[in-house]
Length: 193
Image 1 (spheres, rainbow, N blue to C red):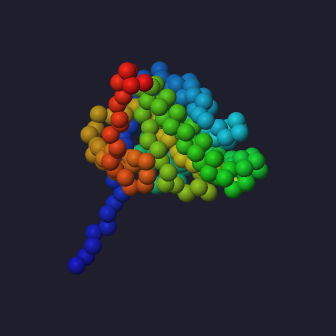
Image 2 (tube, rainbow, N blue to C red; image 1 turned 60 degrees about the vertical axis):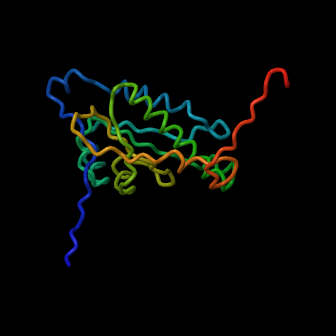
Image 3 (tube, rainbow, N blue to C red; image 1 turned 90 degrees about the vertical axis):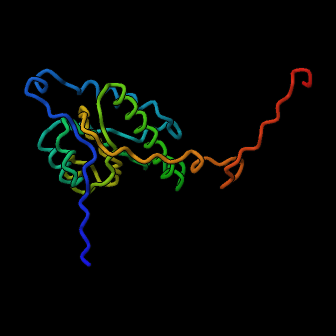
């Protein structure tokens, strides 16, 4: 029996811009203000290790799209690339600095994503890409980590399959690992206190 190869489905579409929209709209200030909000994320040792590169050059956007092998990335007007440098945290916290860097970068990216949404723009977290292609395209030095890329655009009204949401009782435990039942909270009256 022949197996069919499954083609990766694109799940995100950006509204195609008219010439007028391209002329009138400059989202760079919205995207930059979103990047700036990312700096309010928690930072181990008060050292901010995440940087964001705002890419608007169509040639570089095409290179990033090719590196991600996801065509929709190339339809974005801007792409933000998150890069981290864990060297200062590793110097201060040894091996745990790597973990702190990942936590801090995740928090900064989440702040960025929330701010993008607030600006009425759309993006998606793209983590699949060839690092070296992006490193060359953006002249990112060795030793820095390319964490993710975020194509920025205006979401279309095309219906897409909604993401499967996890049931809450599959991700929250009470008092110990795998305990899905919360003990009832004992209520006291004011007189008893």
